[in-house]
Length: 512
Image 1 (cartoon, rainbow, N blue to C red):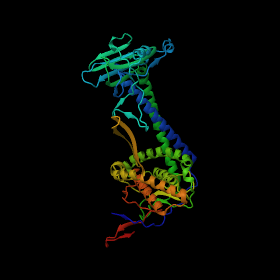
Image 2: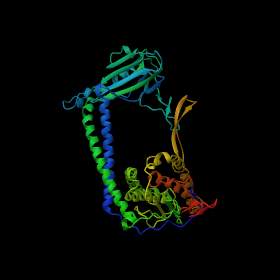
Image 3: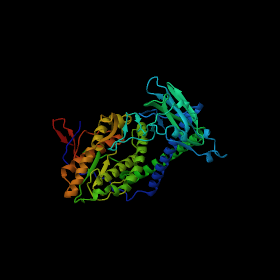
Protein backbone atom coordinates (compact mmCIF):
# COMPACT_ATOMS: atom_id res chain seq x y z
CA UNK A 1 0.00 0.00 0.00
CA UNK A 2 1.25 3.45 -0.88
CA UNK A 3 2.04 5.85 1.91
CA UNK A 4 2.31 9.61 2.11
CA UNK A 5 4.77 11.83 3.84
CA UNK A 6 3.73 15.20 5.24
CA UNK A 7 6.92 16.96 4.07
CA UNK A 8 6.11 19.60 1.40
CA UNK A 9 7.42 18.93 -2.06
CA UNK A 10 7.78 20.91 -5.27
CA UNK A 11 4.73 22.13 -7.17
CA UNK A 12 2.93 19.76 -9.57
CA UNK A 13 4.41 19.18 -13.06
CA UNK A 14 4.15 22.12 -15.44
CA UNK A 15 1.72 21.80 -18.34
CA UNK A 16 1.73 23.71 -21.63
CA UNK A 17 0.45 27.29 -21.36
CA UNK A 18 -3.31 27.73 -21.10
CA UNK A 19 -5.25 29.46 -23.87
CA UNK A 20 -5.83 33.16 -23.35
CA UNK A 21 -9.62 32.88 -23.03
CA UNK A 22 -12.59 30.54 -23.20
CA UNK A 23 -14.93 30.97 -26.14
CA UNK A 24 -18.12 32.85 -25.39
CA UNK A 25 -20.15 30.53 -27.62
CA UNK A 26 -19.41 27.59 -25.35
CA UNK A 27 -20.57 29.57 -22.33
CA UNK A 28 -23.78 30.49 -24.15
CA UNK A 29 -24.45 26.84 -24.99
CA UNK A 30 -23.77 25.79 -21.41
CA UNK A 31 -25.94 28.46 -19.78
CA UNK A 32 -28.85 27.97 -22.21
CA UNK A 33 -28.56 24.23 -21.72
CA UNK A 34 -28.60 24.47 -17.92
CA UNK A 35 -31.58 26.86 -17.87
CA UNK A 36 -33.49 24.79 -20.43
CA UNK A 37 -32.80 21.57 -18.53
CA UNK A 38 -33.92 23.15 -15.26
CA UNK A 39 -37.08 24.48 -16.90
CA UNK A 40 -37.72 21.02 -18.29
CA UNK A 41 -37.35 19.48 -14.85
CA UNK A 42 -39.81 21.98 -13.37
CA UNK A 43 -42.35 21.30 -16.12
CA UNK A 44 -41.92 17.55 -15.66
CA UNK A 45 -42.53 17.85 -11.92
CA UNK A 46 -45.63 20.01 -12.48
CA UNK A 47 -46.89 17.62 -15.13
CA UNK A 48 -46.35 14.55 -12.95
CA UNK A 49 -48.07 16.32 -10.05
CA UNK A 50 -51.05 17.21 -12.23
CA UNK A 51 -51.31 13.64 -13.53
CA UNK A 52 -51.06 12.30 -9.98
CA UNK A 53 -53.85 14.62 -8.84
CA UNK A 54 -55.94 13.50 -11.79
CA UNK A 55 -55.33 9.80 -11.08
CA UNK A 56 -56.16 10.27 -7.39
CA UNK A 57 -59.61 11.64 -8.29
CA UNK A 58 -60.71 8.91 -10.67
CA UNK A 59 -63.86 6.95 -9.89
CA UNK A 60 -65.04 9.61 -7.45
CA UNK A 61 -62.04 9.29 -5.14
CA UNK A 62 -60.74 12.12 -2.96
CA UNK A 63 -57.22 13.44 -2.53
CA UNK A 64 -56.70 12.76 1.16
CA UNK A 65 -54.25 14.47 3.48
CA UNK A 66 -52.38 12.98 6.40
CA UNK A 67 -54.46 12.22 9.47
CA UNK A 68 -53.94 14.58 12.40
CA UNK A 69 -54.69 13.96 16.07
CA UNK A 70 -56.47 16.91 17.69
CA UNK A 71 -56.99 17.32 21.41
CA UNK A 72 -58.86 20.04 23.24
CA UNK A 73 -60.14 20.45 26.77
CA UNK A 74 -63.02 22.51 25.41
CA UNK A 75 -66.41 21.33 24.19
CA UNK A 76 -65.75 21.67 20.45
CA UNK A 77 -63.17 22.06 17.72
CA UNK A 78 -63.96 24.84 15.24
CA UNK A 79 -62.32 25.23 11.84
CA UNK A 80 -61.54 28.59 10.26
CA UNK A 81 -64.55 29.79 8.29
CA UNK A 82 -64.60 29.23 4.53
CA UNK A 83 -65.98 32.06 2.39
CA UNK A 84 -67.47 31.25 -1.02
CA UNK A 85 -68.34 34.44 -2.95
CA UNK A 86 -71.84 34.12 -4.42
CA UNK A 87 -71.58 36.80 -7.13
CA UNK A 88 -68.72 35.14 -8.99
CA UNK A 89 -69.72 31.54 -8.41
CA UNK A 90 -73.32 32.24 -9.32
CA UNK A 91 -72.54 33.81 -12.70
CA UNK A 92 -73.26 31.79 -15.86
CA UNK A 93 -69.61 31.85 -16.97
CA UNK A 94 -68.25 30.30 -13.77
CA UNK A 95 -68.73 26.60 -12.94
CA UNK A 96 -71.15 25.66 -10.18
CA UNK A 97 -69.62 25.43 -6.68
CA UNK A 98 -69.89 21.65 -6.56
CA UNK A 99 -67.90 21.38 -9.79
CA UNK A 100 -65.07 23.48 -8.40
CA UNK A 101 -64.39 21.47 -5.23
CA UNK A 102 -65.90 18.97 -2.82
CA UNK A 103 -64.74 18.53 0.75
CA UNK A 104 -64.58 15.25 2.63
CA UNK A 105 -63.95 15.05 6.40
CA UNK A 106 -63.45 11.84 8.36
CA UNK A 107 -63.40 11.97 12.15
CA UNK A 108 -62.60 9.11 14.55
CA UNK A 109 -62.72 9.38 18.32
CA UNK A 110 -59.54 8.50 20.19
CA UNK A 111 -61.72 7.34 23.11
CA UNK A 112 -63.26 3.89 22.55
CA UNK A 113 -67.08 3.84 22.15
CA UNK A 114 -67.27 7.66 22.34
CA UNK A 115 -69.90 9.00 19.93
CA UNK A 116 -68.56 11.80 17.76
CA UNK A 117 -70.40 14.58 15.93
CA UNK A 118 -69.09 16.45 12.86
CA UNK A 119 -71.05 19.07 10.98
CA UNK A 120 -70.79 22.00 8.58
CA UNK A 121 -73.06 25.00 8.90
CA UNK A 122 -73.28 28.75 8.30
CA UNK A 123 -70.53 30.55 10.22
CA UNK A 124 -72.97 32.97 11.83
CA UNK A 125 -75.17 30.18 13.19
CA UNK A 126 -72.12 28.25 14.42
CA UNK A 127 -70.79 31.36 16.16
CA UNK A 128 -74.14 31.86 17.90
CA UNK A 129 -74.24 28.20 18.93
CA UNK A 130 -70.74 28.31 20.45
CA UNK A 131 -71.05 31.78 21.97
CA UNK A 132 -69.46 31.81 25.45
CA UNK A 133 -68.72 28.07 25.06
CA UNK A 134 -65.09 27.03 25.70
CA UNK A 135 -63.81 25.63 22.42
CA UNK A 136 -60.65 25.43 20.30
CA UNK A 137 -60.10 26.94 16.88
CA UNK A 138 -57.93 25.16 14.35
CA UNK A 139 -55.15 27.17 12.81
CA UNK A 140 -54.17 28.73 16.15
CA UNK A 141 -50.73 27.41 17.09
CA UNK A 142 -49.42 27.25 20.64
CA UNK A 143 -45.92 28.56 21.35
CA UNK A 144 -43.62 28.51 24.34
CA UNK A 145 -42.01 31.65 25.74
CA UNK A 146 -38.68 30.66 24.15
CA UNK A 147 -40.14 30.48 20.66
CA UNK A 148 -40.41 26.69 20.36
CA UNK A 149 -43.64 25.22 19.03
CA UNK A 150 -45.70 23.32 21.57
CA UNK A 151 -47.46 20.05 20.78
CA UNK A 152 -49.25 17.43 22.83
CA UNK A 153 -47.17 14.78 21.04
CA UNK A 154 -44.93 14.61 17.98
CA UNK A 155 -47.94 13.81 15.80
CA UNK A 156 -50.80 15.69 17.47
CA UNK A 157 -51.80 19.30 18.12
CA UNK A 158 -53.43 20.52 21.32
CA UNK A 159 -55.22 23.73 20.39
CA UNK A 160 -55.68 26.58 22.89
CA UNK A 161 -59.16 26.93 24.40
CA UNK A 162 -61.22 30.11 24.29
CA UNK A 163 -62.70 31.59 27.45
CA UNK A 164 -66.33 30.85 28.29
CA UNK A 165 -68.71 29.56 30.94
CA UNK A 166 -71.63 28.14 28.92
CA UNK A 167 -72.29 24.48 28.20
CA UNK A 168 -73.46 23.73 24.62
CA UNK A 169 -76.72 21.98 23.87
CA UNK A 170 -76.94 18.70 21.99
CA UNK A 171 -75.31 19.32 18.54
CA UNK A 172 -77.43 16.64 16.84
CA UNK A 173 -80.57 18.58 17.71
CA UNK A 174 -79.53 21.74 15.84
CA UNK A 175 -81.25 22.44 12.51
CA UNK A 176 -78.75 24.77 10.85
CA UNK A 177 -76.26 22.07 9.83
CA UNK A 178 -75.87 21.72 6.05
CA UNK A 179 -74.08 18.39 6.41
CA UNK A 180 -73.58 16.39 9.61
CA UNK A 181 -72.89 12.89 10.93
CA UNK A 182 -72.70 11.36 14.39
CA UNK A 183 -72.07 8.01 16.04
CA UNK A 184 -69.29 5.70 17.15
CA UNK A 185 -66.37 4.76 14.95
CA UNK A 186 -65.37 6.85 11.93
CA UNK A 187 -67.87 9.54 10.92
CA UNK A 188 -67.69 10.98 7.42
CA UNK A 189 -69.31 13.93 5.69
CA UNK A 190 -68.94 15.29 2.18
CA UNK A 191 -69.84 18.84 1.21
CA UNK A 192 -70.06 20.71 -2.09
CA UNK A 193 -68.76 24.26 -1.85
CA UNK A 194 -71.75 26.61 -1.77
CA UNK A 195 -72.02 30.42 -1.68
CA UNK A 196 -71.75 31.81 1.81
CA UNK A 197 -69.49 31.62 4.86
CA UNK A 198 -69.18 28.22 6.48
CA UNK A 199 -67.57 26.59 9.52
CA UNK A 200 -66.76 22.99 10.41
CA UNK A 201 -67.45 21.81 13.99
CA UNK A 202 -66.27 18.60 15.70
CA UNK A 203 -67.73 17.66 19.10
CA UNK A 204 -68.65 14.73 21.25
CA UNK A 205 -72.22 13.76 20.33
CA UNK A 206 -73.30 14.21 23.96
CA UNK A 207 -71.73 17.72 24.09
CA UNK A 208 -69.20 16.66 26.73
CA UNK A 209 -65.58 17.62 27.14
CA UNK A 210 -62.71 16.99 26.38
CA UNK A 211 -62.67 16.17 22.65
CA UNK A 212 -59.95 13.81 21.39
CA UNK A 213 -60.21 12.87 17.74
CA UNK A 214 -58.26 11.85 14.65
CA UNK A 215 -59.20 14.00 11.66
CA UNK A 216 -58.48 13.33 8.01
CA UNK A 217 -59.55 15.74 5.29
CA UNK A 218 -59.91 15.10 1.57
CA UNK A 219 -60.78 17.16 -1.46
CA UNK A 220 -61.73 16.56 -5.07
CA UNK A 221 -62.52 18.85 -7.97
CA UNK A 222 -64.38 17.81 -11.10
CA UNK A 223 -62.98 20.89 -12.83
CA UNK A 224 -59.40 19.93 -11.89
CA UNK A 225 -60.10 16.33 -12.87
CA UNK A 226 -61.20 17.44 -16.35
CA UNK A 227 -58.23 19.77 -16.81
CA UNK A 228 -55.30 18.14 -15.02
CA UNK A 229 -55.20 14.96 -17.07
CA UNK A 230 -54.61 16.57 -20.47
CA UNK A 231 -52.63 19.51 -19.09
CA UNK A 232 -50.42 17.23 -17.01
CA UNK A 233 -49.52 15.05 -19.98
CA UNK A 234 -48.77 18.11 -22.09
CA UNK A 235 -46.58 19.70 -19.45
CA UNK A 236 -44.72 16.46 -18.85
CA UNK A 237 -43.98 15.86 -22.54
CA UNK A 238 -42.97 19.50 -23.04
CA UNK A 239 -40.72 19.35 -20.00
CA UNK A 240 -39.17 16.08 -21.16
CA UNK A 241 -38.36 17.58 -24.55
CA UNK A 242 -36.93 20.76 -22.99
CA UNK A 243 -34.84 18.72 -20.59
CA UNK A 244 -33.44 16.53 -23.37
CA UNK A 245 -32.53 19.52 -25.55
CA UNK A 246 -31.05 21.31 -22.55
CA UNK A 247 -28.86 18.35 -21.62
CA UNK A 248 -27.54 18.10 -25.20
CA UNK A 249 -26.68 21.81 -25.28
CA UNK A 250 -25.17 21.58 -21.82
CA UNK A 251 -22.92 18.66 -22.76
CA UNK A 252 -21.81 20.38 -25.96
CA UNK A 253 -21.00 23.58 -24.07
CA UNK A 254 -19.13 21.71 -21.34
CA UNK A 255 -17.11 19.79 -23.94
CA UNK A 256 -16.20 23.02 -25.70
CA UNK A 257 -15.09 24.69 -22.47
CA UNK A 258 -13.11 21.58 -21.55
CA UNK A 259 -11.23 21.62 -24.85
CA UNK A 260 -10.43 25.30 -24.47
CA UNK A 261 -8.87 24.92 -21.00
CA UNK A 262 -7.10 21.58 -21.51
CA UNK A 263 -3.52 22.31 -22.64
CA UNK A 264 -3.13 18.95 -24.37
CA UNK A 265 -6.35 19.21 -26.38
CA UNK A 266 -5.69 22.88 -27.16
CA UNK A 267 -2.16 22.14 -28.40
CA UNK A 268 -3.13 18.93 -30.18
CA UNK A 269 -0.24 17.03 -28.60
CA UNK A 270 -0.06 13.49 -27.27
CA UNK A 271 -0.81 13.25 -23.56
CA UNK A 272 1.52 11.48 -21.21
CA UNK A 273 0.42 11.21 -17.61
CA UNK A 274 3.02 12.83 -15.34
CA UNK A 275 5.07 10.55 -13.09
CA UNK A 276 3.33 9.47 -9.89
CA UNK A 277 5.48 11.63 -7.62
CA UNK A 278 2.35 12.92 -5.92
CA UNK A 279 -1.19 11.70 -5.45
CA UNK A 280 -2.97 12.25 -8.80
CA UNK A 281 -5.43 14.68 -7.22
CA UNK A 282 -3.40 17.79 -6.48
CA UNK A 283 -4.73 20.67 -4.37
CA UNK A 284 -2.47 23.60 -3.50
CA UNK A 285 -2.98 26.84 -1.63
CA UNK A 286 -0.34 29.38 -0.65
CA UNK A 287 -1.08 31.78 2.18
CA UNK A 288 -0.72 35.36 0.95
CA UNK A 289 -0.10 37.84 3.73
CA UNK A 290 -0.76 40.45 4.96
CA UNK A 291 -4.49 39.79 5.17
CA UNK A 292 -7.14 42.40 5.93
CA UNK A 293 -8.53 42.39 9.45
CA UNK A 294 -12.10 43.01 8.31
CA UNK A 295 -12.48 41.93 4.67
CA UNK A 296 -13.55 38.42 5.69
CA UNK A 297 -16.74 39.97 7.11
CA UNK A 298 -17.97 40.83 3.59
CA UNK A 299 -16.33 38.18 1.44
CA UNK A 300 -19.62 36.25 1.31
CA UNK A 301 -21.16 39.32 -0.32
CA UNK A 302 -18.27 39.90 -2.72
CA UNK A 303 -18.32 36.25 -3.79
CA UNK A 304 -22.05 36.20 -4.71
CA UNK A 305 -21.35 36.42 -8.49
CA UNK A 306 -19.12 33.35 -8.15
CA UNK A 307 -21.77 31.49 -6.15
CA UNK A 308 -24.36 32.10 -8.87
CA UNK A 309 -22.06 30.86 -11.63
CA UNK A 310 -20.94 27.87 -9.56
CA UNK A 311 -24.59 26.90 -9.01
CA UNK A 312 -25.03 26.67 -12.80
CA UNK A 313 -21.71 24.88 -13.21
CA UNK A 314 -22.63 22.46 -10.42
CA UNK A 315 -25.75 21.36 -12.29
CA UNK A 316 -23.68 20.93 -15.44
CA UNK A 317 -21.08 18.97 -13.47
CA UNK A 318 -23.71 16.44 -12.38
CA UNK A 319 -24.89 16.03 -15.98
CA UNK A 320 -21.38 15.55 -17.41
CA UNK A 321 -20.50 13.10 -14.63
CA UNK A 322 -23.55 10.92 -15.39
CA UNK A 323 -22.85 11.04 -19.12
CA UNK A 324 -19.16 10.23 -18.51
CA UNK A 325 -20.16 7.36 -16.22
CA UNK A 326 -22.05 5.66 -19.05
CA UNK A 327 -19.14 6.32 -21.39
CA UNK A 328 -16.67 4.74 -18.95
CA UNK A 329 -18.97 1.75 -18.55
CA UNK A 330 -18.70 0.94 -22.26
CA UNK A 331 -15.29 2.34 -23.24
CA UNK A 332 -13.25 2.42 -19.99
CA UNK A 333 -12.30 6.00 -20.83
CA UNK A 334 -13.42 9.34 -19.42
CA UNK A 335 -14.09 11.75 -22.33
CA UNK A 336 -11.21 14.17 -22.02
CA UNK A 337 -13.17 17.40 -22.75
CA UNK A 338 -15.68 16.57 -20.01
CA UNK A 339 -12.84 15.54 -17.72
CA UNK A 340 -11.17 18.93 -18.18
CA UNK A 341 -14.50 20.68 -17.58
CA UNK A 342 -15.16 18.73 -14.36
CA UNK A 343 -11.68 19.49 -13.04
CA UNK A 344 -12.21 23.13 -14.02
CA UNK A 345 -15.43 23.35 -12.00
CA UNK A 346 -13.70 21.89 -8.94
CA UNK A 347 -10.76 24.26 -9.51
CA UNK A 348 -13.08 27.28 -9.66
CA UNK A 349 -14.89 26.06 -6.53
CA UNK A 350 -11.62 25.67 -4.64
CA UNK A 351 -10.37 29.13 -5.59
CA UNK A 352 -13.60 30.70 -4.32
CA UNK A 353 -13.39 28.59 -1.16
CA UNK A 354 -9.75 29.53 -0.59
CA UNK A 355 -10.68 33.20 -0.92
CA UNK A 356 -13.78 32.94 1.27
CA UNK A 357 -14.94 30.54 3.94
CA UNK A 358 -13.08 27.34 3.22
CA UNK A 359 -9.68 28.84 4.05
CA UNK A 360 -9.57 32.70 4.03
CA UNK A 361 -6.08 32.24 2.61
CA UNK A 362 -5.94 35.32 0.39
CA UNK A 363 -7.62 38.67 -0.17
CA UNK A 364 -6.98 38.48 -3.92
CA UNK A 365 -10.31 38.18 -5.73
CA UNK A 366 -10.75 34.86 -7.61
CA UNK A 367 -10.70 34.95 -11.42
CA UNK A 368 -13.76 33.99 -13.46
CA UNK A 369 -12.28 31.05 -15.32
CA UNK A 370 -12.15 27.27 -15.32
CA UNK A 371 -8.51 27.21 -16.39
CA UNK A 372 -5.38 27.15 -14.28
CA UNK A 373 -4.12 30.71 -13.87
CA UNK A 374 -1.72 32.67 -11.73
CA UNK A 375 -3.58 32.47 -8.41
CA UNK A 376 -2.49 31.38 -4.91
CA UNK A 377 -4.87 28.38 -4.98
CA UNK A 378 -5.00 25.72 -7.68
CA UNK A 379 -6.45 22.28 -8.27
CA UNK A 380 -5.62 19.62 -10.82
CA UNK A 381 -6.23 15.95 -11.50
CA UNK A 382 -3.98 13.81 -13.70
CA UNK A 383 -5.98 12.45 -16.63
CA UNK A 384 -6.25 8.64 -16.49
CA UNK A 385 -5.74 6.78 -19.76
CA UNK A 386 -8.12 4.03 -18.65
CA UNK A 387 -10.66 3.54 -15.87
CA UNK A 388 -12.30 0.42 -14.49
CA UNK A 389 -15.69 -0.39 -16.00
CA UNK A 390 -16.79 -2.20 -12.85
CA UNK A 391 -15.72 0.43 -10.34
CA UNK A 392 -17.84 3.09 -12.01
CA UNK A 393 -20.91 1.27 -10.72
CA UNK A 394 -19.92 1.20 -7.05
CA UNK A 395 -17.13 3.60 -6.21
CA UNK A 396 -19.18 6.82 -6.21
CA UNK A 397 -21.59 5.56 -3.56
CA UNK A 398 -20.62 2.23 -1.94
CA UNK A 399 -16.83 2.43 -1.75
CA UNK A 400 -16.87 6.13 -0.92
CA UNK A 401 -19.17 5.77 2.12
CA UNK A 402 -16.39 5.75 4.78
CA UNK A 403 -14.79 8.86 3.29
CA UNK A 404 -18.13 10.64 2.81
CA UNK A 405 -18.96 10.13 6.49
CA UNK A 406 -15.60 11.47 7.64
CA UNK A 407 -15.59 14.40 5.21
CA UNK A 408 -19.17 15.20 6.16
CA UNK A 409 -18.16 15.51 9.80
CA UNK A 410 -15.08 17.56 8.93
CA UNK A 411 -16.72 19.98 6.51
CA UNK A 412 -20.50 19.95 6.97
CA UNK A 413 -21.47 19.30 10.58
CA UNK A 414 -25.03 18.25 11.38
CA UNK A 415 -28.45 19.75 12.04
CA UNK A 416 -31.56 18.09 13.40
CA UNK A 417 -34.86 18.45 15.21
CA UNK A 418 -35.67 16.54 18.37
CA UNK A 419 -38.77 16.08 20.48
CA UNK A 420 -38.44 16.59 24.22
CA UNK A 421 -41.10 15.89 26.82
CA UNK A 422 -41.87 18.99 28.89
CA UNK A 423 -42.49 17.99 32.50
CA UNK A 424 -44.01 21.38 33.30
CA UNK A 425 -46.73 21.34 30.65
CA UNK A 426 -46.88 17.56 30.14
CA UNK A 427 -46.40 18.11 26.43
CA UNK A 428 -43.81 17.48 23.73
CA UNK A 429 -41.61 20.37 22.65
CA UNK A 430 -39.88 20.48 19.26
CA UNK A 431 -36.32 21.81 19.50
CA UNK A 432 -33.59 22.24 16.91
CA UNK A 433 -29.95 21.43 17.50
CA UNK A 434 -26.79 21.42 15.41
CA UNK A 435 -23.12 20.55 15.56
CA UNK A 436 -20.80 22.82 13.53
CA UNK A 437 -18.18 21.28 11.27
CA UNK A 438 -14.54 21.17 12.29
CA UNK A 439 -13.60 23.19 9.22
CA UNK A 440 -16.18 25.85 10.05
CA UNK A 441 -14.91 26.15 13.62
CA UNK A 442 -11.28 26.43 12.47
CA UNK A 443 -12.09 29.08 9.87
CA UNK A 444 -14.11 31.04 12.44
CA UNK A 445 -11.21 30.93 14.90
CA UNK A 446 -8.90 32.08 12.12
CA UNK A 447 -11.24 34.95 11.25
CA UNK A 448 -11.37 36.14 14.87
CA UNK A 449 -7.58 35.97 15.16
CA UNK A 450 -7.31 38.00 11.96
CA UNK A 451 -9.74 40.55 13.33
CA UNK A 452 -7.70 41.21 16.44
CA UNK A 453 -4.11 40.46 15.37
CA UNK A 454 -4.07 40.57 11.53
CA UNK A 455 -2.08 37.30 11.65
CA UNK A 456 -2.92 33.86 10.24
CA UNK A 457 -1.53 31.06 12.42
CA UNK A 458 0.59 28.68 10.33
CA UNK A 459 -0.61 25.61 12.22
CA UNK A 460 -4.25 26.50 11.64
CA UNK A 461 -3.62 27.11 7.95
CA UNK A 462 -1.88 23.72 7.54
CA UNK A 463 -4.77 21.90 9.23
CA UNK A 464 -7.41 23.78 7.19
CA UNK A 465 -5.55 22.89 4.00
CA UNK A 466 -5.44 19.24 5.06
CA UNK A 467 -9.21 19.09 5.58
CA UNK A 468 -9.89 20.74 2.23
CA UNK A 469 -7.41 18.42 0.51
CA UNK A 470 -9.17 15.36 1.90
CA UNK A 471 -12.56 16.71 0.79
CA UNK A 472 -11.41 17.39 -2.77
CA UNK A 473 -9.75 13.98 -3.08
CA UNK A 474 -13.03 12.35 -2.11
CA UNK A 475 -14.98 14.63 -4.47
CA UNK A 476 -12.73 13.63 -7.36
CA UNK A 477 -13.23 9.95 -6.55
CA UNK A 478 -17.02 10.30 -6.29
CA UNK A 479 -17.10 12.26 -9.56
CA UNK A 480 -15.38 9.29 -11.28
CA UNK A 481 -12.26 11.28 -12.19
CA UNK A 482 -9.85 8.65 -10.80
CA UNK A 483 -9.87 5.03 -9.67
CA UNK A 484 -7.15 5.68 -7.07
CA UNK A 485 -8.80 5.20 -3.67
CA UNK A 486 -8.32 8.29 -1.48
CA UNK A 487 -5.95 7.74 1.46
CA UNK A 488 -7.24 8.05 5.01
CA UNK A 489 -4.72 10.79 5.69
CA UNK A 490 -4.98 14.42 6.72
CA UNK A 491 -2.10 15.63 4.54
CA UNK A 492 -1.50 19.16 5.75
CA UNK A 493 0.36 22.08 4.25
CA UNK A 494 0.14 24.31 1.17
CA UNK A 495 1.27 21.67 -1.36
CA UNK A 496 0.85 17.95 -1.87
CA UNK A 497 3.18 15.62 0.07
CA UNK A 498 5.54 13.34 -1.91
CA UNK A 499 4.22 9.95 -2.94
CA UNK A 500 6.11 7.08 -1.34
CA UNK A 501 6.15 3.38 -2.14
CA UNK A 502 7.75 0.59 -0.13
CA UNK A 503 11.20 -0.50 -1.31
CA UNK A 504 11.09 -4.29 -1.98
CA UNK A 505 14.61 -4.65 -0.55
CA UNK A 506 13.90 -2.63 2.59
CA UNK A 507 11.24 -2.32 5.22
CA UNK A 508 11.41 1.49 4.94
CA UNK A 509 9.51 3.43 2.29
CA UNK A 510 11.56 5.33 -0.26
CA UNK A 511 10.61 8.18 -2.55
CA UNK A 512 10.02 7.18 -6.10
